Length: 224
Image (cartoon, rainbow, N blue to C red; front, side):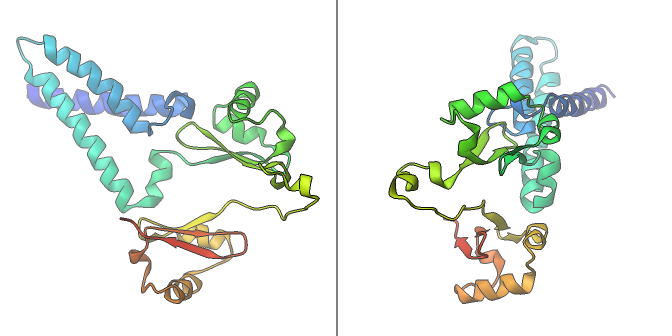
């Protein structure tokens, strides 16, 4: 009965910490996924308790095993079911695009304007006019696609007017077809299959990553 209590409280604390981390937002996690962050701080705390628990050390030991098992289980689940990743790890959020700042997206990401400006400066962008698209990733980092005319080896110096590039869309990840991303680009599984066969692949399972650009050109990568 006492063992069941320890297991129950460990599971309850895991759920509580997960929900708190989700409310706190991505900024608190740096490069860690939500549950990696939770597991790291919790196992460290339980480990310290285990080191000083002389009467019943099995209690914190069971709790550590539960947290480790949950972390491994979530990793397996997200690999098998990629659609669940956005619910567990979160999803990227577009903060700025084509000169427009998306206030509602900033609120969802728990990111205020001053923090956004700091992140831009840390990446070397002191003028927002140099930014085409800014995305707040689920790991709490900001990635930026600069305006083509402001990139290194500036085309402006050469009196060129390059076509603005757009972010590539993942259509295959870990050998699985991302149907929602295909539909977003106006494509379907038949189109993808033809592209795979044209590049010497029989099916998506042979591909580790597939990226589709703004011209619907498919780039395929195999995993080692």
